Picture 1 (cartoon, rainbow, N blue to C red):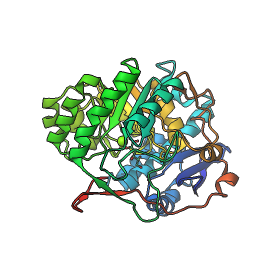
Picture 2 (picture 1 turned 90 degrees about the vertical axis):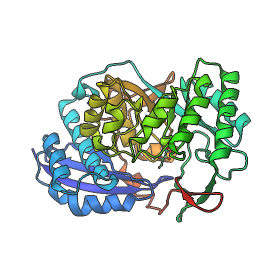
Picture 3 (picture 1 turned 180 degrees about the horizontal axis):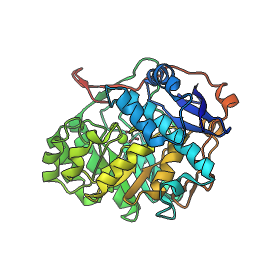
Length: 402
Ligand code: CS2
Ligand code: MG
């Protein structure tokens, strides 16, 4: 069995997606997502110049060998561009293997461990009242878990407050939108939001929150402690995690569960966080962390310390990643939760998929493979549009973390 074609498809049905399609001499094809929000063309070039020529003629059944070949063969190792390219190949090959077996991907991984995948939706509003209404709307739609982000008085363009209803796209301009950040205004505001939320929706729904890498370790400790009365399911990305040791300090001060890892590419980015039990949920996902082959390794390692998974699932992760993640989530024993920000109807049409939302849970569907395909003719109607993520500055103009 041989790979006879591999092509990179770029499409922008509302936002940019990079997809790798691998075709075998048996006529079976598989697809993988390689989208890197705001830096899409870097992965396109990496795939076209350095990966596609290596794939032609290879045996598509040798997933592990291909993963090791691309990882070790690059010599330089890791990084978001390399690991997304590897992820795209890996997911496409798992798709092919499962299709050839006539099985849904979760059956290739070890079979289903649960009836459905618990997901959290994104509720946000310009102020506390609007956000509380939005959370209530999600609860009405059947969601058992909701992430809440609100505008902050005195802060222009706060993170996580979108324009859409069920989805929004942060990469909104050709040149990065400049936003302003004030940690002190945020720290005063966040407990008020969750106080109002628990008052309205009670404690029967799981609530989550994302600080998006903006605090120092001690500020993060303060936030975690101030949110303890509201029993969050998790508090995400409280401080940048390049320095994994920083979480030791946070951990000494709060019992609020911590989630980290949407920007991680490999097990090496979270090794200390996991083995020192500094986090509760690992957010690495299929497209970010080298595909199913590598994410499985991270999840198994995390399971030793009872750390659970919580795959990133914002709109910049294409339906291909969502489909593959749902098969992974259905199997992984130490599953925690799956992020689910809905895609636009245009995106859903370009990527026909078997997964569906029912009673607050997502099901991967029963199709063989990962259950997601690409309509190439429709994809071609939406050409690439250069867009970048925003940046953030402190009120005095100092560059900060967006
Ligand atoms: C976020 C993302 O989903 C999340 O938790 O942190 O929205 C993130 O900002 C985007 O994926 C960036 O492209
Ligand atoms: Mg996040």
